[in-house]
Length: 235
Image 1: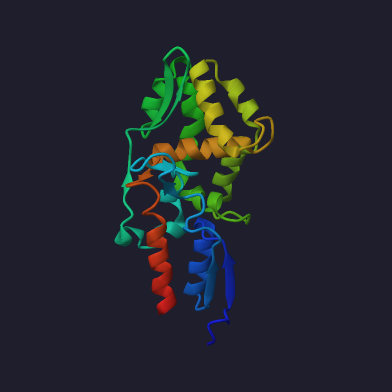
Image 2: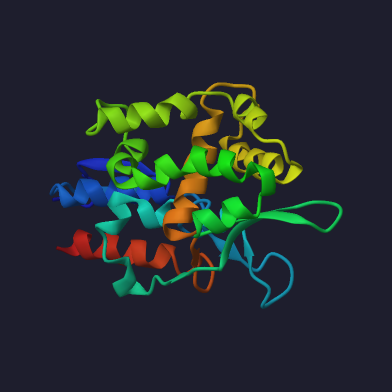
């Protein structure tokens, strides 16, 4: 095969580009991966942006869904140095008076800290946590008929709603702030439909396995990807 002939060309070496390239190579195709920047990883990069020795996450820092991804779980990333750190508190929403709402791996602990909104929070999130194994693959997959349609339908009842509607079920500033912060990860006005989906998934993910942080920042993270990609390339 000429070095100028490939079965596929993938432009961009972020997580999606690397995943696509690896998947194509796993299928026996030759792949050219093209990246315009000096380093690979896309938004998953850590650099010394200010002073030497002070590392900053260029884009993403915490990776709630990485530990739940079926594709990432199929790769031996740990063999190439990937190690996750789990903080006791997955996320917190601070307020001006010094108080904060927080999410831990314990659903009951998180709910109890919300006072009169304890039951509202628990009843909203517990069904998703309980049915997580049946719905997570379909949540992360392209649109298709779900493997567990009843469980996905139950999730969809709340997930399809605007986050601004779900928040009316909470009375305290803590619960409202926590919910708004989670739903804001949708990067959409919270009055739009489906903005509740990301908030529900992020909260449930925290109660299942926390929100992991790659040890040493994200500079080590692209390297396992590159080594795996190279491993399949040379074979």
